[in-house]
Image (cartoon, rainbow, N blue to C red; front, side):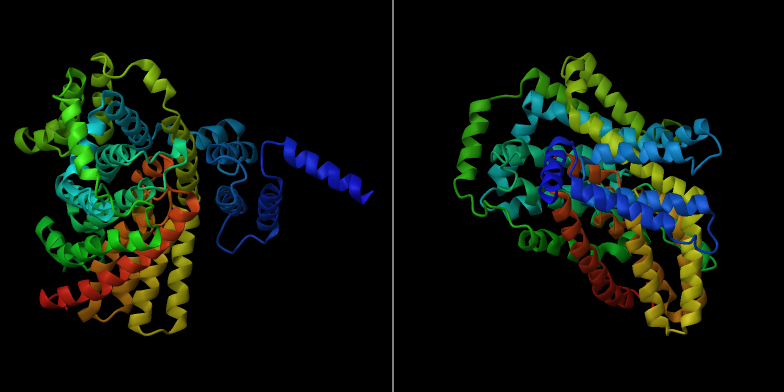
Length: 501
């Protein structure tokens, strides 16, 4: 009897399109969470949504099925359970609500545009130029990508457009020039390392400039309110305060990732000569390369909001509008065709899984789960009787690591930052309030290091297949802790020199 059951289990395990043991574990997690009593202060439907969200994350971590299928599972369960609405029609509208998000479509279109760099050969040319300049060592290329991100950051208000739409295609081109391609199983040559550097430069530069990512102006507003208008972060003040700790993080980051996820190709002494030879063989820019380069320049100018600076705010364009304009230009000029758009599987896969995670995070906020958690944290801190330094530490870490629950920095900052800043303002000595506010400001960007769904840039780079999810989360956690320490130590000393405490 036992042998028959064992044989039936093996057959079923080989026949079904999912991993059976992880699927059973995930199902058990869902039922255990649903069986637990609803916490005080939450509605039963809100707790059910928490259970669905956590189960989805567990399913993704355990790789029950491809991440897009797990996201589809979450959409189906939300719609069937009606935890967000009183009707099936309202529930499916909620479950699909995030697919109208401009941020998600910015990610999709950025991936589609990057296909043009590969198809025209311009991406390979750019990659070869980088290799010719910095290609003697892989770590040198990593620093080159970091400098590229830093130069673009002050005038690219969308970190997704910068890291995913501009720098990532260059990174992929460099990796391809070394024949480092996930499709061939050779991503470990240089691609995994360069993809991680490409990504982790993005949160650091987002912390360094007020104009480097969309939610930063909201942070400025919350900091002013929490300090009772006694501390204002202008563009110059922000840049000056974040300059030294930010540069320290950028200096350390490629080296630390080199140790955490070392490339298989470390020394590439022949790469420079190879790259120069290939550039000579390619000759002058082809017409479609010129179109691609012109479109790239147009996107950069519009993403940097230069027309609005010259002609006034009426010329301001949303980053997603700019991305669609760029894609349309590439299509009508024949640089890309419609089959290229339809066949870019990574873009449409990202649309599904990232859209579902954004939806879950938004609905958690809508049902009051996030505000409930923030209030509970505040009450626990007050009741603990801790000193001001442990209070500041707990607030910073709780805010940053709660980003595991979010697929958007804007949503996280909107939902939780002001509450945490206000608690800090009430419990910390006035002399130490400003460094706390500055650390929380830096943390609002550093938290993007944690997951593959943390911000718009992450699904683009993760979706290219160079980094496994386990490696992404492992490196992300280490880099988050390291960068917080750098901002606390180097930043604290720098802010002391500047006279802020």
